[in-house]
Image (tube, rainbow, N blue to C red; front, side, top):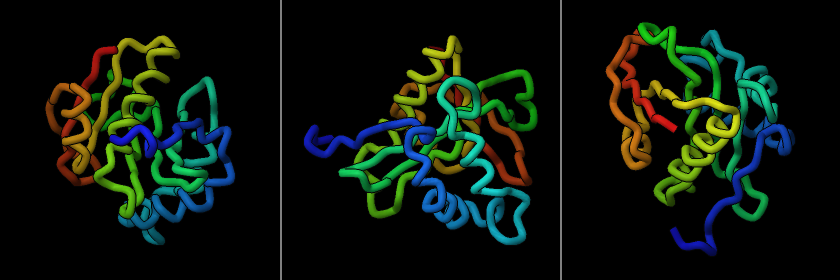
Length: 158
């Protein structure tokens, strides 16, 4: 990534003005969960992740004050992995900004946040971001059905 174009990573708690836009992004990306008929509440989840020291913690990526990405560190495990955590969740980069390493950078910052909070490992359950996890040296730990979808579980020792 060109260092002139490296995004700034900050806590969502410091950038709460992005919550309405991020809410729209989450709804668009995960309609089955956050859409009108889904069980999730995007804005509520984001407001709860606007923290600095306790989970859930959200991180945002910006270029020149323009929001380009989001990730969170949370407690909620997936089926079959109830005794594991914390979990990286909602890795989301705006479609126009994808392919620039922003997701990878968000994952790296999330690892630092987890490490600074005293965690010795982090998990991720996802169906779409396996490349990001592999590029960041996360290990495939298995798979599980979550909300009736096959989810790949990754683990990273910190």
